[in-house]
Amino acid sequence: MLCPKCSFTTFEYADTCKKCGYDLKAYRESKGISASKPVSRPALKPEKKIEASPIDSGLSELSEPTFTTPTIEEPSIQTPETPFDEGFAAPPPPISDEPVSEPSYEPLPPYPDAESLPKGGFWIRFVASFVDGIVLIIIQGIFGFFIVLGVGMGSIMRGGITEEGQILSFIISFLVSSIVGMAYSIFFVGWMGQTPGKMLLKLKIIQTNGKEMTYGRAFSRWVGYSISGLTLGIGYLMVAFTKQKQGLHDKIAGTYVIRL
Image 1 (cartoon, rainbow, N blue to C red):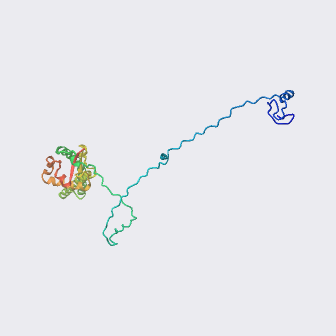
Image 2: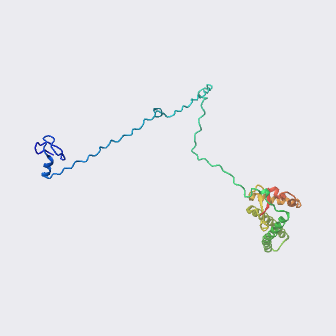
Image 3: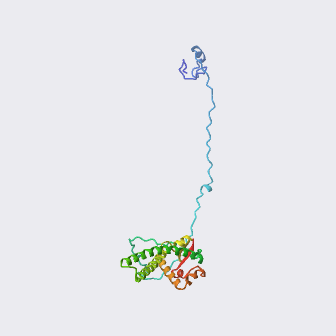
């Protein structure tokens, strides 16, 4: 506020001018000026800064532990001096472009435990042979009928049946019967190891190594049949006394007769 008398700047709430002593209170009342004394507020105290206490220098200066690995001295290997050529191995053989064949494994036979399988005894095999004999007689009879009929018709056309014609028909019938009997046995035994009689009684012929029969083994067995017959049937009787129920023909051909 300016003093109206001396123009001295003073506070609005002052009653007199500090310079000339002019009555400022009467002047304010005449002018209608109201002045209020400012409220003094205590000054804010500055906040204290909290300083972190220094860490002990002994702890701050901690360093990471260091580990030292002991050095191991490798033993020196002394090798005898060898010539240059002897110190190197021979070069490997050249790689072939041919494909490597996988090793072949022989499959197991159909009857790997052939020796321990149940075998057919003498009497059941006798019945099977009896059935085969009946079937064979029927087949041989059919062939013999046509042979006799053919020889007889030829003899009649030449003037009658002679004695020579009868002998010829007998020889032809015998040969044909023998061939039919051999073919009957070799075919069925070589094909499936069973003749019709053995099929009926559930018997089967196999090789002693557990494999199926072949036509070659079937032929050997038929030869064995002939030899067993020449021994007055002793070869057949061996079935009843041998451990594996083998006749002479089985031993010759290397076969077993097993029960299915």
